[in-house]
Image (cartoon, rainbow, N blue to C red):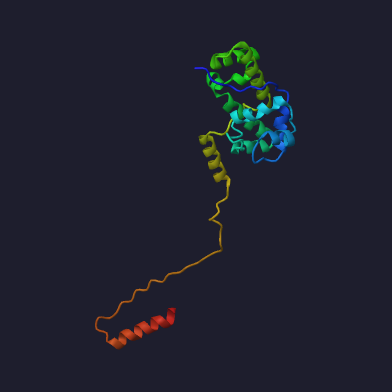
Amino acid sequence: MAVLLPYLASNKNLPVLFEKIGSAKIPDAFNHEFLQTTIGLKGSNDRSMISLLRYMGFIDQSNVPTPAYRLLKGEKEARRIAWGEGVIRAYRPVFDADEDVYKHAPEKVKGLIAQVAGTDDDATARIASTFLALVKLGEFSAKALTEEEAHEEDEEATEEEPPKNNKPKGLRTEFQYVIQVQLPSNGTEETYLNIFNAIRKTFV
């Protein structure tokens, strides 16, 4: 079954879009006014970038920036990784067909797109051109730590950290006395009281 894949009439301003998103404020809505006034892209061909950002998961159906959009505001390498993830979201069926499609030459990319989308030569060329322009701005080789690797790193960090609750708090000495008293079986009450009084005076 054919799928819809995004493309732009012109890709020349994609680098401008990428850089401007990184430096501009996060809008309440990424609409035509924001694209023209804040991003500075006023051409009629640039309007389809809003739809492209929607495909990439950076804005929702109401053009409101998603959490993924905020990732485009970080350091350059982090932004490239986030952009690459957006490309994968937009062209998921193509990546499902070949996970390394971003590495391939244009002709092979066109073949994969035609296979997945069932498009004619003209539409295939347009989609491939946009895809390849997007790929140049993204990073696809960086991989997040697996849960197992992250767990191992946490364990190593824990082993390296000094114990928090085992710091010496000074020498504490405690003594316990165990006193055994042999009482005479034929002693009087006065005898017993004298013995206990003598013990109390000695140790208390």
